[in-house]
Length: 356
Ligand SMILES: Cc1ncc(COP(=O)(O)O)c(C=O)c1O
Image (cartoon, rainbow, N blue to C red; front, side, top):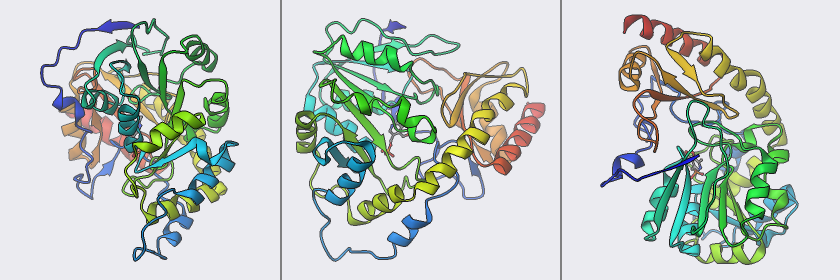
């Protein structure tokens, strides 16, 4: 890991989330967003047929938090529900008001933006190419560390023992660990830091329900921490920010354990081998080893802008990754989709590369 100076006088371009934004033409297959390609669980769609929009939602999201607490073996008071994981990232920045933060780059840029919003100064610590393996560093002088596990866009997962040891040996520094993509993995529970919350009063874990349950339009996420940190965080979440439909959808999704098994099977059988297939495909494509449902690739002999334009001609869209801190226009992020869609992607890639 090495600390890099912040070269941006205006970081606004870093905060663009790729081409998704609901503007992707419907005929394109979208490999740019890392959402479960199996679609939302049937129970969610059913729950949405009984809308209770003539009443205010439960401001405490109690039933949802009880469902989550039972799932994670915690007390409902240790859980804070939010309007997507993003809501909790911004709430955490407001709640803990760090003067100085460290971010493990390249990563999800909302940690940077949320930190700037509360006036924090930001240290960017860069994992080294080509593997981008996450490592601890000396966080001396920092109030808060942001990291994602597995990380977006690199797909790298921490060694759990190393991460726990690092957090435990820095008790005065707050660690915000974003596990948005961990539930795709069958070992997600074993890899999670949630079971260590009782021993680590300086840890907040953030989770998203939008990725794994394929409902990014719904907006639903949660944070887990010891009771006192959770209370500070809850103070910063705008009342009623989790609407009735999202609460109902979340409960229905969490109750559908068969859906999670199906998703984790898809991850093991299809998503994990996607990286291998991309790597075997052409010397122009060098994938970063991924433990997530998307793959960061480094391109040789072409640029992400050029290749993604070419791919669009063949009906697929990907995420150029040049606006992640520490990456450039040689990097692309490709999310795994269903078997048929992935085959179509590889075919499009072959043709697009031939035509460059
Ligand atoms: C690491 C990470 N955390 C959180 C989010 C946002 O999650 P949500 O849709 O729940 O706000 C994203 C979205 O891309 C992400 O990549």
